[in-house]
Length: 400
Image 1: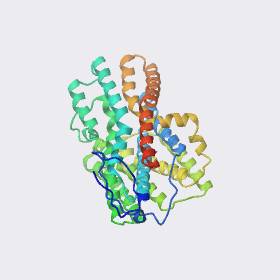
Image 2: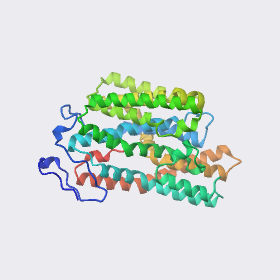
Image 3: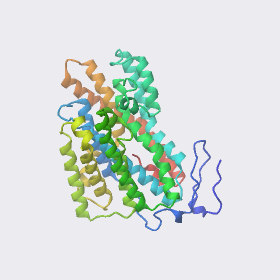
Image 4: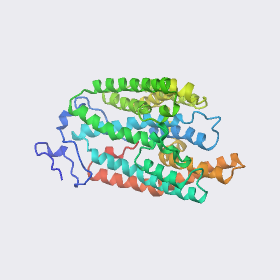
């Protein structure tokens, strides 16, 4: 058990029970927080960001389930997820530091586990049952067992990037979760080190932007040297650019980034148009992705997120806050987890009816996502809300 230092004002010290995983960075006075001299209104609940999640998941569903030839760039939705996730998580960490003078990293990882693990374990159990019932769905129990271990340890993306083991088809989509969690295994610690070293937010923003450019160049160099698209598509280092860009937006927000309502509307509208125009483009790994294909997606994500968060109200936000967008966005995690294995199962069940199997896969995905959200994810979110209220930490309600 770690006793809080007695020299801090009690108003800045949260009360919480001792947990085995509750390792914390030693608190500093709140006045030492990097942006204490530049107060920024907490982000709070922004329903329009759920609408951005809907924009991210929709092309992924279409690519997986129905029309991969038409929506060849549907996988670009994953990059929109990366940018949004980097923004939300970094903003949450900065707000916690500003409020408490510390970041409770152990509690951060516990919240991540509560958010991700229940639905992921449920999908893994379903995939195993379906694979055994359907004769493997193109894989073997031994391969499934090896890869499941990689999925549970969030290292499975490197199996694809380095060709170290065969990737069972029903589990192939877990690579993006691995990229995110490897990033968040390191990023909170680096952020705390930067704050404790009194690195200014302006300097931190410059470091993040330079790192983004470096990783983008590294992805191109790897292609020029190895001509291996899988290394660029699935490597954590080569896919970190979206997460870094999202983190940069969060830091810029805490530097006081604001814009007029009219310019925010232009940013959001132009970002949505650019993103929609990208989706039908051919997803040629050699000519498009490896040589700069991600930048338009990341630019569109930047424009939407900045416009939606740098102004108090934006006209286009009402579109993203419509019931359909909110339904898709709030269930985007479950939709992503269930869509790919259910699509494969539908094709295996109706191999001679591709259109019918596509429709069946999408309908089953919607049903499974609704059940997961209502009876699995939402109860866990209520638990997180209870914990947050008990410890007076409203920022814990933010998800990525």
